[in-house]
Image 1 (cartoon, rainbow, N blue to C red):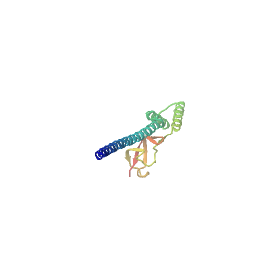
Image 2 (cartoon, rainbow, N blue to C red):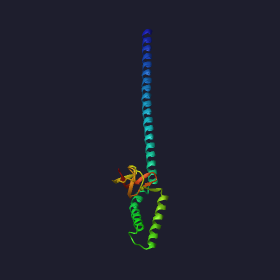
Image 3 (cartoon, rainbow, N blue to C red):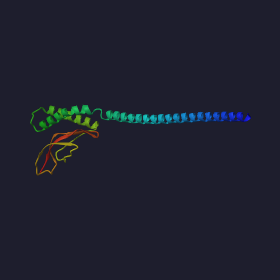
Length: 179
């Protein structure tokens, strides 16, 4: 009977060890699952952090652009008024309009102040007679032929173009020479 008891004890010991191995296997499996979940959460965290950094950079760039070019719309609306002053000054200079000398001086004084203000704001006019046509800066309204000028040279300017810092805010409207 001792053999039966030893066999039974041996079976119980084997069963206990098998149960212990199963528990350890379950713990290892559970640990592996938890490690996988942790790895997945860390990956999600890194992606979310990267997305947030990209969002922050985009917003910083957008805000910087608003601050740097904030007055652009106001300037665009003032340009037609400046054009009218320029036309008036040219007309007075050609004696097409008879005005008192003090009015002429006043108009020139206003134009000088506007030019100074534009310079302070880093607004530069462009588009002069004799310049070469640059499609990035000029809109060719029409062409004429003049032997005194080279091909693609500006013969006349309808409207000056303006550049605000590094942006073109209005293209110059010009007549271009074509031979």
